[in-house]
Image (cartoon, rainbow, N blue to C red; front, side):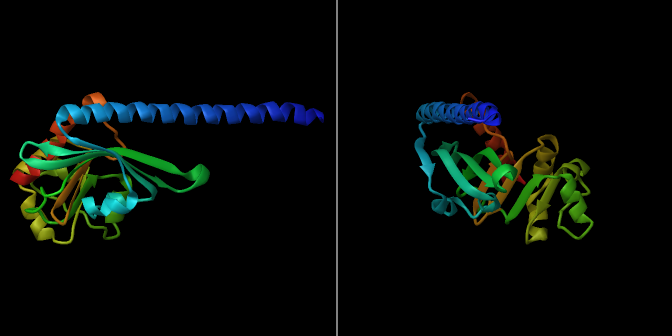
Length: 222
């Protein structure tokens, strides 16, 4: 064995051991999370499903979130009722790019299958620098003179601007002006609510459900 090889082999083995250790630790953490969320579902009286195949995601709604990236996964799916409405809670993730340039986004998502029937189709998301630049080139963003705070912090888009403006009344604008960072999609009568890239801890699921339900109620009242 040549001298360079003597040094290279231990380094390679060390890197492989480190990567293997990270993968193992991640898998164990996900297993613990799944077990904890299954227990939460039982306490809430929700049905629990470990995973939904990607091809079945469309049954929950034709949301833009489900069209981003690749390697899409819906795990730890809980279905039940929050107050008087049906809700589906899940861990959802997708990956953009590939290899060293890949990035995986993970978020807790609440879907209300029938809560958007009275709402027009729209996408609401936190406004960022890219969106502001896009507006200079005609990228749609529905702003409201009645709420500068809402308009400053959120990007609102959809095919029927008049209907969207009617849906976002004083209560909805006031709510989102105070509660920032939410993403909401209304599609074909279904509503999806989440914070991009934010996953809820199992012990925080109940207060998180109360938060997403407050989003739903603000939109219902307009």
